[in-house]
Image 1 (cartoon, rainbow, N blue to C red):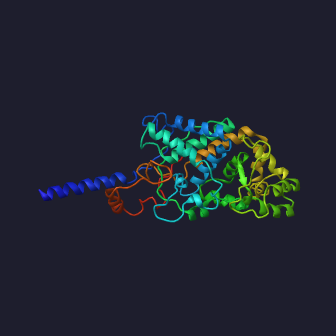
Image 2: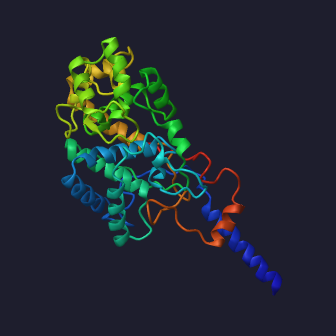
Image 3: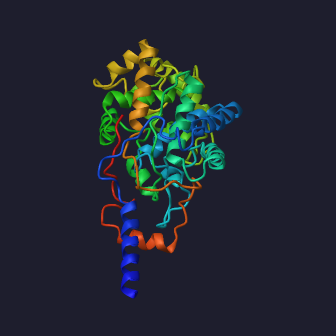
Length: 356
């Protein structure tokens, strides 16, 4: 009897471990992933985003940026939303590229709460973030697109990963091209996604000092730099709260005005200005400045492609109940995780990258 009981227990444990392993075939993200399990998921997210943006129009840009900063660090797995790293140390949220400028966390929390009330333990925070970014594009640019879903949430978030992976405002065009290439995005797609700077605001610390070098080099309008100097205190630092619109003309409308400003030396960041100083990227800037429809079409495609970066699917990761913390694990789950073969943990690069 003891032997049979032990054997049964072992079989059950092995079966449980197998359930946690990634599928042998590469899982793909799917449009309509929640049609059966949570058919109103996207509607609930859209309602939360619409209400938030109606109250604060700047949150649309914040949500698009939040999705971008999530996908560029450990893939699109909602790691940017974690406020506590189970392994200890600081999370992505406190890294200089994110703190204090990243916003929209409360919108994701509100959307998640609504979805959990309707469909508990079903919709990942990573998918909610992708839906929220899409809805922000729709609200500000009158462009709608279908979002492939099925992402799982990661269990790791570290400050250093954000510092190592997020492109900064002082990078050259070549550095930007190389950084995006690491994420399987082309030089043109880098220019396309940079166009999201047509909405939103930026903190003084991200542009003031580098723009003094640009002024000396003649690559920023003296009148524009004078306005920025008047706005920003001379002792500007990371936590200086002063901000300005990135697009001076239509700061709450997702249009192609960003590209029109660059040849006028009115790009806010050094990295923005770099797009017209580089032989590879300058033609794309000119094309998108001349044709807004073209840019929007390609922007949608680039957003979908970006949303597929290093995604976790199937049995990888988890569906968080609270987007800011990982789920509590039982002792049995901890034991099973110890038995998993090397390379299947959340800390290893995901080998299932969905493509659209």
